[in-house]
Image (tube, rainbow over the protein chains, first blue to last red):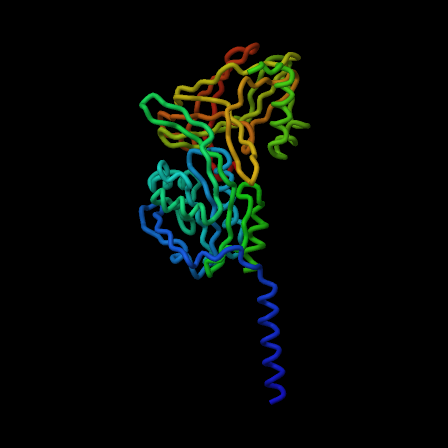
Amino acid sequence: MRLYIRNLILVIFTIGFAISCSSPALDDYSDVQYHLMDQNGESVIFPDDYEGAPVVMGFIYTNCPDICSFITANVSKVYNEMENPGETQFVLVTFDPDRDTSEVLKNYANAFDMDKDPFQFLTGDPDVIDQLMTRVGVRTQESYSREIEDGERMYFLNHSDKILLIDSRSRLIFDYGGSMTPPNIIIEDLEKL
Amino acid sequence: MKPVPPLLLSITFFILTSSCNSENTELQSSQFELPDSGIEITDAWARPGRINGVSAIYMNVLNGSAEPDTLISLSSSIAGLVELHETYELADDMMGMREAENPVFPGRGVVSMQPGGFHIMLMQLNQPLNVGDEVHLVLKFALAGDISVPVPVQSQSEQN
C-alpha cells in the first residue's frame, strides 16, 4: 500500500512537472472555425482539420516577391531540416485573397517545390481571411498602388512578418518573426511540444 | 520637395543596402574585385513568376569608376513595369516595400542587391518565368550608359 501511494505521488509529481515545463499558450483557437480553401481547391476548416498534430503556419501574399519568399522558404526549411517531422503540418495562408486564388497559390507553391505534402497553401473568402488575420494578429496596409493599362489596379501591402507554432490542441504556443527566425529555433520549439 | 544631394543619397543608399541584412555587409567588405572603370554586374538571378504577376531580380553592381553613377531607368521586354524597390522594416514587426528613387552607386564601390533589401521589381509579367529561363534586363546609368544583363531564373528554394 505504501509503495502504491509513493508511486502515485511520483506520477502526479511527474505530470505536474511536465505541465509546468511546457510553454504556456498565447491563444487558443479551438473556439473558432474558419472555412478556407487549399491550393487544390479543397475546402478545409481551421483549426478543426489540423487538430492532432502541430502546425507551423506562415502568412504571405504572392505579389510580394521579396520578404514573403523568405517566409515561405523558412517554413520549407523547418520541414527539410527536421530529423523527424512526424505528422507536423506546414501551412501558408494568404492575406490577399482577392488576388491569391487557389490556382495562383498552386503556381506559387510549385515555384518553391512545395506543392506537395506536408505543405498546404490556404486562401478563402475575404471576410473570413480578414477575421482569421485579426485573430492571429497579422496586420496589413496598402503601401503602393498604381493604375495599369487595362484599368486594373496593382498594389503592394505592408504586412506583419509572422510564423506561428500551434500545438496539436489548436493552441498558439510561439509567435516568430517570419523572415528573420532561423529554422533551428522553430525546430527546437517544435521538439518541446 | 527639396532635392537630395547626390552624395548624401549615395551614402544613404550604401548604408541602407549594407544594413538590410548581414549577407550584404559581408559581401561588400571583401569579396569583390572592382573593374578598372565603368559598371559591372555580377551574380544576377531572378525569381520565378507567373504571367501578369511579379518577380524580383538580385545582383551585385560594381562601380569601378572613381565617380558615383546614377541609375536612370530599368527595362525588360518581359515586364510592363520595372523599378528598383527596397524592403524595409516598419514599427510593430511590419515589413514594407517601396520604390527607391534616384539610386546612386558610389565610385569604386559595390551595391549588393540581396533578398530582404534592394531588388529590381518586374511587374506585369507578360510571360511566366520558370526555373531555367533567362530574362534580359537593361540598366541605364547616367555615366556608364546602357548595360544589358542576361539574368537566369533560379529556384526559390535554393536562394533564401
